[in-house]
Image (cartoon, rainbow, N blue to C red):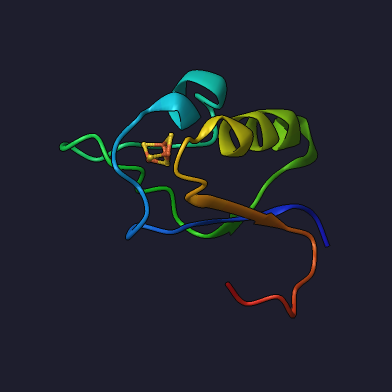
Length: 71
Ligand code: F3S
């Protein structure tokens, strides 16, 4: 099981730091909120996913490698 991401839409306030640090992982909607779907990240993009998650001031991006960990 690889790295999974989950974006808490309630916590996202549109800082866009996720996109700056993870341009190939995260997607913003028309209003600037992170709308990346829950997904497993390919190994080549794990560094971007991690950097983007850590860069979010609202800590709206959860990372897990545990499939039983439902956010
Ligand atoms: Fe939202 Fe955090 Fe990105 S607030 S737009 S998930 S940096």
